[in-house]
Length: 107
Image (cartoon, rainbow, N blue to C red; front, side):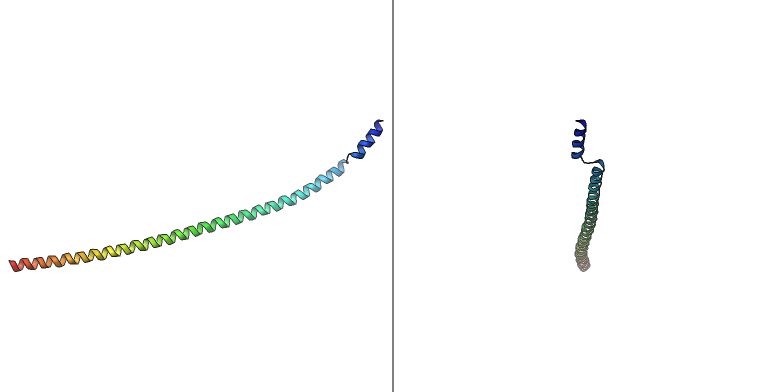
């Protein structure tokens, strides 16, 4: 009876070498999938890095353009102020001359 049970058991249980072969095959299949996923991850990281660098570059260029525009506006305002100051100075000088002439005529 024990021998009969052992034969039945052996008939239904796969052998250790066949299990080992099946596991090795699964490992090979999984390795290729893992490598493919690693490649996809590296590609995604490269894309992210390139995108991030482009965004930083674009922002830097926008800030540079805004800075140049601001500096241009400030320079224009300074020119206007200088012109207004020069005009007022010349008007004041002319009034002083006129006043001096009036004093000389009155004296």
